[in-house]
Length: 483
Image 1: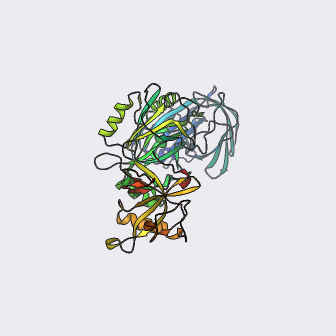
Image 2 (image 1 turned 120 degrees about the vertical axis):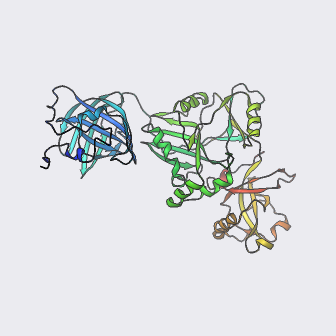
Image 3 (image 1 turned 45 degrees about the vertical axis):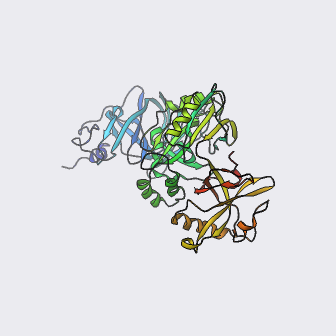
């Protein structure tokens, strides 16, 4: 005979086979009598196809359950979606383990919090409870908005004050220079040949912002694991997105293939062919606490304590003192250089500070593209060279031409980017040598790129520049001359 539809666990049993899953699957029997004392609750962190938190309240012999995609809010007034799911047996409150991949809800389950609760209202459309757990202590309301959709919200202030997760924190910037003459009070990190990104983590989901406030989350789908690694911990992390070559060295040219992608399907394909990693070197916000006012040493301690790691994420080491040795190691590994940071320095969002000094091995310079010259011979019909400028007194000043370092694909992309920017004259404050201006096609100074070069000439021109790529993460106003 078919089971009685009145048993609240029938749906739960129909989705599980005790022979294939470690979850408790009790047989049909009389449900336990309603508890006479305190009622229990549990929150389980569930790394299934999509990370979520399962919120379960003991009632009438079962665990009434909701899946909360971003976890229960810790701050008053924050509203989050909660999806009503099937009732679970009381034994499930103790379950932690791995559900096989092909089974319903396949993935790892851990107990995030548990405790008791008092209920002040329970209806088909509203549930009001007071939780007493290790992490969750306070009054919460669940309100049904339609079908299986509910909203969960905290009603009271947490016992300990919490800062709200910032919506925008711009990265702190370093000044170019040499190694400090005295190592005392300085820490050193390797300089990575990538693109600066600030990562916002909220409820296991990430948002990636470039240095010029562009949302680049869609460009790097493999970095979603950063959110899963932090789970319910809210954070704002500062770091570098880096692509590596076949020898395991950072490759800015390979990263160029990823930086301009805005199509999600293309980004997913490229993530398999040209994977990137997020190298984290600072934390600006952590678990309800703004950390920008704390010294560098303490921020690194907090960051190291997160134990972040995996195929697409790492926290590179830092070294207290020994700048010359760190620089030598960077040279041996053919890295870009090092960054020296004052150990007692605070984090100054959006500011270029002498508390951070970047010391380069390979000389590179960000440049503003102000024009182009047509190619000859094999490059006939396309770009032969780019005309470059740097900010200076009164505006942009000519800095030379670059005609090497381009691939055919790069030239095609540059032509597409420059086509709508044409103008009749140079957007420059100073003069341009006649020989270099005679065949120039001038453009609005909106594109920023990067070149490698050997040295500066006496008239402030780049000597032997080679094109490294566009920098869509930077604006023309951000460009400064590297000494």
